[in-house]
Length: 316
Ligand SMILES: NC(=O)c1ccc[n+]([C@@H]2O[C@H](COP(=O)([O-])OP(=O)(O)OC[C@H]3O[C@@H](n4cnc5c(N)ncnc54)[C@H](OP(=O)(O)O)[C@@H]3O)[C@@H](O)[C@H]2O)c1
Image 1 (cartoon, protein in one colour):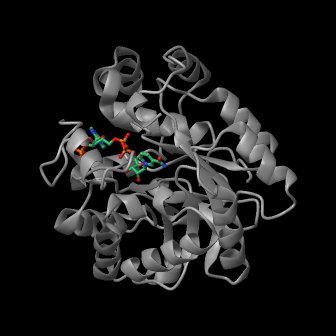
Image 2 (cartoon, rainbow, N blue to C red; image 1 turned 30 degrees about the vertical axis):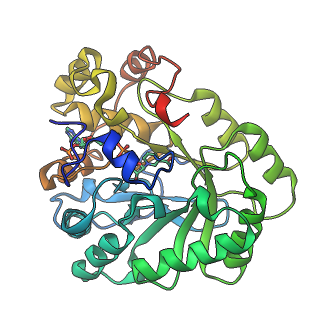
């Protein structure tokens, strides 16, 4: 596996640079809770993707496809493949420069829009009330949809992020965004939104994987009824995640891969994961996590892997 490979031939650094100089870069249910989306090609009923009910009543799949770096025809193919396999949650962002490809993949899939759950994110360059409204419109135009299921402030570090939030609240009330949330926010920013009396974030999307487990964030978010969502659920393979001995040993017990053990661990912690893959076999493998359970000793072993630090210092 080439964890740094970009299907367009770019490595991570080049991808970050092509981001036009940008720094690019519930309710918690136990396993098996809630209604599920069907996974038509995935074989067994066990592989249906369970849903979680967010704090505004909206239901969201607990596993989805990440699309960062999946651009052009590759992005279109991966999104169409994922949907054909049973994925319904697709995560994109303005800064990934692939919203058109994601939209084309959705169209190719033939699945009705209302059966999908599409997330996009507002980038720093569009921070503020008016820019956020324009940024949202540009994203949905590129995606070829007239609403989003979830829209997040991608990196609220600096700029008028509260103006953006106000615009997103209005779009939410107008029915253009079913749920709004944050990504990469700090506790003070979340506290401010919670205390503000406006729309409470439904989701917080943050870096979370075996080496950066974010236990404190998980507790805080649970306490406030905000659903946690993991970006880089495999740490993009950094720190040797795909050859980690602890994860491999657990995988052998259940005849599962390290990727599947990792995703099952996120799931059992009540965290939505959006693994990215450019390979149909991996996209299918990542869905095949609903027919086994990690036991307490497995969960305890994985908790010892926490380094409690980001694996993406270039984004901090
Ligand atoms: N909000 C934010 O700031 C933020 C930041 C980063 C990412 N995100 C979102 O989170 C998504 C996921 O994070 P990510 O893309 O950074 O990384 P990731 O999902 O942790 O890892 C992706 C890597 O894992 C490999 N992989 C996937 N499935 C595999 C399997 N079954 N076996 C072996 N290797 C496998 C992929 O390679 P192959 O292609 O070869 O399968 C790829 O190299 C992104 O795509 C994006 O949508 C959000």
